Each structure stands twice: as C-alpha cells, then as structure tokens.
Length: 251
Image 1 (tube, rainbow, N blue to C red):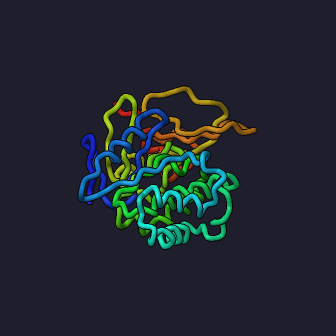
Image 2 (image 1 turned 90 degrees about the horizontal axis):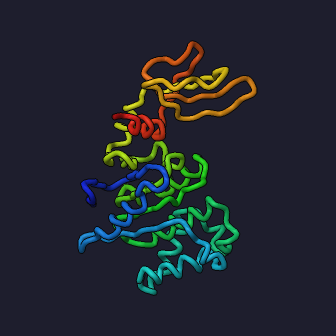
C-alpha cells in the first residue's frame, strides 16, 4: 500500500524523514496521520512519556489499548504481543519513570504496534539513542515494517542507518525530495574522507565539513569532497548525514 501527501509518496517498509529541528518533520507526519481513509488508518506516536511516569509498562500499554478502542477481549493478547516483540517482558512491571531512554523508546514503539494500523508514524522516538540502540529497535520492528508503511522522523544524527528503504529530506530553503536510501548513499559514494589536520582548513568551494573534533595533535575532520583533500586521508563509507549535507549544499 502507499500513502501520499504534499507530492511525497510513502510505501511499505522503513521510510525515513530527515532534517534539522524546526524544518517540518512533525508537520509532515501529522499530515500523513490526517490522510487516513476507509482503506487504511494510521497510528502517530511521539516522544513524551512524562505524564505517565507512575504507570508500569503493562499498565501504560493497557491504557493505550483502551484509547485505541481495541476490544477488551483482545487487549491482553495485544499488549503481551507488543511487549514480546520489543523484548520488554523483563520490564513489564517497572514504572515508566524508572526506564532508560532506550527502554522508553521501546515502549513507544510497542504502543504503535498495539494498533492494526497499516501506517505507523514515529516522530523522533529514537532521539538521544546511540547507533547500536537504534538498530536494535529497528531490527525488532522488522516484521512490522515488511507489512506496513513505517515513517520514522529523526534528526540527522538519529537515523536508522542501513535499515531505511527510502528517505525524505527536508530543508528550510529547498524543496523536499524523497528517494531510495541507496540513491542517497550513491550521491556521496567515494566522496567522504576522514583525516587529522594540524588546524582547521579554510572553507573551499565544493568541500563540505560534516564532522570535526579537537585532538591533542590536531583536528579530526570528516569531509565531503570530489577530490582527495590531503595526502594522509582515509576514504570512508558514507552515511545519510553525509548524503543530506551534500544534497543541502547543492544549488
């Protein structure tokens, strides 16, 4: 199945929506949520859990099942299935306020999986997790993503690297684009370099600095450039952040 809004079309699988804060990711997901028809419904999930911090994981999911109008006879099965899918069985009786960020993210995804909705809209539910934690949750959702349209909005540093099927890039000064993840990677294939310089290089046309870190013996730099930026340099595998920065820099 497919869902379309603002000229952007999302199909079954993992669809990423990437961009900096304030660029319109939440607005796009809410438009997708409003685009439901008789043929499909959507489930929109966003981050805050603070108001429920005194509920246990199971109590929260049972409450949310009620909010989704799941028949009472099916609630226990649905809650247990979502807990099992996200490997939360050991934490089912813990209060939400006691959980780590990664466990809270798992609970949010479990909430989305309670629904039979064909469209799952996850708004920055993986924020502040490290890459390993994001991929763990992404793999746990794998079966659901095969059968449904999963749209995951995230900041550049919080994407599901390597798991996304498509990616929609948002920028305040550019028209949004929606391409396969492989296409995005191909934009910067063979153009991403890492090296240590004695000092910060001067900005140059056609060179994009994607990361930097001050070291004792210089400055670590990750750079996107068509040509090798210096003699002692390593060519590295591109990320979606690299692809986004390259795309954003194109005139």
